[in-house]
Length: 139
Ligand code: RTP
Ligand code: MG
Image 1 (cartoon, protein in one colour):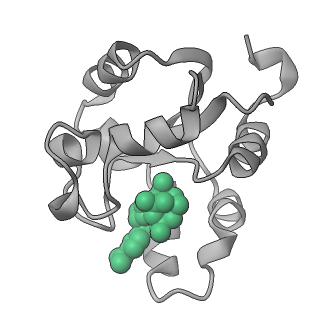
Image 2: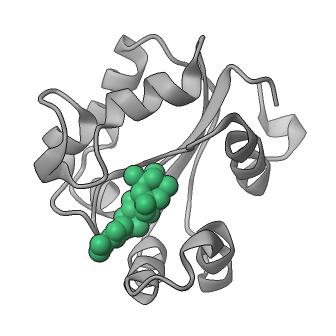
């Protein structure tokens, strides 16, 4: 994957609350092109692998339960400086600390259920995109 791409998930809470359309509108309005996108649900094994970096953290069990409880929207997004600009658009992990107008400030309920994921590096964007999409699903 090129370094001008990032990977995102609209997490189960965002889907449950009917926020898919509003969040995608904000992503589009912020200049990201959708390269790949689907509604899918992570299995326990998927979530444990995806968030393996957090497996020793006290919230890991809750995180896996949350991320597997319903469908997510997975997507690959393209824009200059995609990883950093998308992290700015979504805001801080804890919505209470997120800047005004960010997706987490607008749509996240708590640090645990925070509506949206954004890759934290170009390397992880490529790994996470490939976790969810085959080459023929990327446009
Ligand atoms: P993400 O990976 O989902 O984009 O979130 P992030 O980089 O902003 O935050 P990270 O530290 O990678 O944490 C991953 C996800 O774990 C949940 N979390 N819960 N209860 C807690 O204290 C806590 N801390 C983190 C959140 O869903 C967070 O997005
Ligand atoms: Mg993270």
